[in-house]
Image (cartoon, helix red, strand yellow):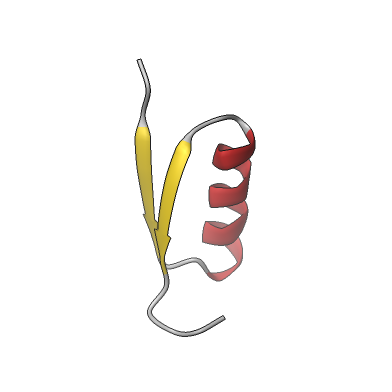
Length: 36
């Protein structure tokens, strides 16, 4: 089963969470309301 995950609001914790999930093979989509 393949999971698709979305993360809203990157900040410090969200960015690390998204990077960690992507490194484990999950398909991750992210959104941040301000430019990085």
